[in-house]
Image 1 (cartoon, rainbow, N blue to C red):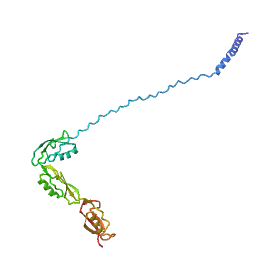
Image 2 (cartoon, rainbow, N blue to C red):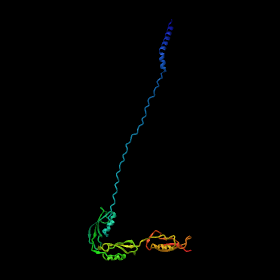
Image 3 (cartoon, helix red, strand yellow):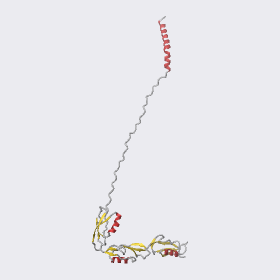
Length: 270
């Protein structure tokens, strides 16, 4: 047998053996899934969180300092009594303090002669210290009730007293008649002190409505309340008859002194 044939036989036998021995393993290897290369792991993205800012702390503004109140100017109370001055000063919270009395001719007892602080100056406190006129003799007070004001005033001044402006009060008595006095005639009072009088005054009457009626009746309605029918004017009117009252002056509801007149405008005769 030549060499070529030998070589062929050896190669054939070797191939058969390899197929027999290694064939199953190769088949198994072919049936197994090939590993798939895995994608690179994706790292989760991290969103940056905003940095927390510190909460601003409100700053307290200092309270505004109120402007100082303007100083009170000292009122002038000279020439009036300390009693009257106290009544006026009370509304301003001012206290009147009597420091001294002095004899003063022609001045009424208690009349303020001097004061400290002086009028017009700024007040450091709410106190005014005053010097007042000394009381003179103590006199009997005349009885002037029932007199007219002028006669009563004259009698009191001749007796050594002073009379301020009277207080008026509605009364059916004659206007100006003295209704009351203070101090009364049963008392004594210092010379040149004030005697207060209350006098009668005409009461104010509410004007009634007299329109919408005839002039004769309007006159009666006015009489009932103490008023009088005044001037009568006329003008023509197509709907109402003669003397029918169309308007009045003063108007209904207004108040006028007792005995006043009310003018009317009535329908003229045809």
